[in-house]
Image (cartoon, rainbow over all chains, first blue to last red; front, side):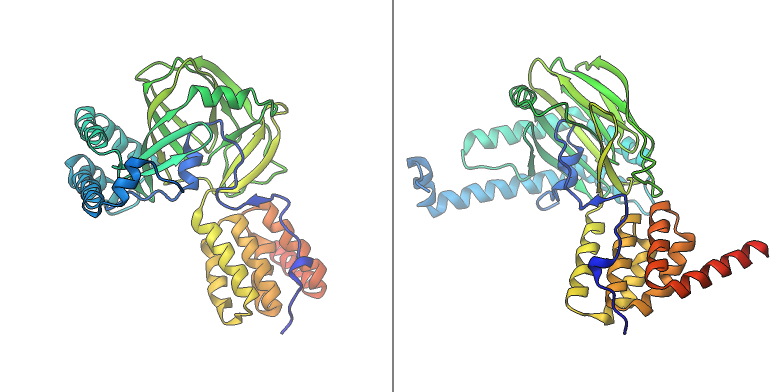
Amino acid sequence: MKKIDIAALPELTTSVGVHGSLKQKEVGGPICLGVVVAILYLI
Amino acid sequence: MIPGPELAAWLGDAAASERTFARIDACARKWSAHPLIADLQREVRAPGERSPEELLEATRRFLDRRDEIDALLRDLIADSRADPFFRPPFQPVSTEIHTSLVLYHHPLLSISLGVTSVDALAAKKTQGRGAGSINFTGFVSLMRFIDAGGATFSFWAAPEITDGFTAAEAGECRLVERRRIADGEELVVDGRRESFVIDHAERDMVYFQAVVRAGRAPIAVEYDASTRGFVGASSTGEASSRVQMMASLLRAMEREDALPLLADAIAEAEFHTRWHLMREMLAMDAEFALPLLKRMAAADPNPDVRATAAATLTRFFPDDAADAGDAEALECRA
């Protein structure tokens, strides 16, 4: 079984951070709601 | 923690804490059974696919029932006044400048009631961290202002974020307009190509906000507010990020038996997750991944994924890369 060292495999040139890693805070709240898994209790 | 006398008394009185929790439970039950929530739930959960426009309309019908919302909020305030340890049964969400309660949550739609603090906004803007960035969230959102706080927003546009997005082709964002927001105004921002920044406010802003996740873009994109150029991107999908994490974990655990699952996941994944899965598969069993890599190099809809797959093919499977090139040429001639 041929395995390739993961560190040797190229990344996309478009680097995409994981969900919720945005640094911008001044725009309206969609980010906050995107980041937090908001669960309304009992609903 | 050193509790104050009121908290110490409450903590030491089992009946008092039971009364508080009973009050919170009763409040949650009242909200979840209320026709306002039940009607919205029915609309959102109706069979079939929901478009962002349909979810915006459902949100408007919900927000238009202000008398019912106000009555429920009055009860919430009364409960808070009656018991200092009462907490509204809603998920609180807060950032440096926003505080809100999520009144309704479904994977396709969230509705919250929030406040943006003018003091926090001013503090943030005077911290001297430069012009900052303009974020395109990838979601459609609706804001209805109860009190717009005398705020002025700037509105921005950028090329639409699609599954074919690449950093190289991200272009620049541009200022569309700058204007004052009126009390009662409704704002719909398509975060796949539109954004806004709060430039200025005279007092706290109070507003309902709905975030529609149906039809979302695969990523959120940031542009530099000074240069207007692309700064970075991050996933809009929690599931997408979890799939990536699980794939890495399976590779670290040497679970080659999971390869068929990872191969299946590629078909449904967003572009950045497709390549993440491919890297993990190549690291687990390159021969297994090779046919998928060839297909990706030839036909993935995202140019960046296609190019990276082709480069990987050439570097690690030079013979197969040549064969793939020949097959492609033959196909073109045919």
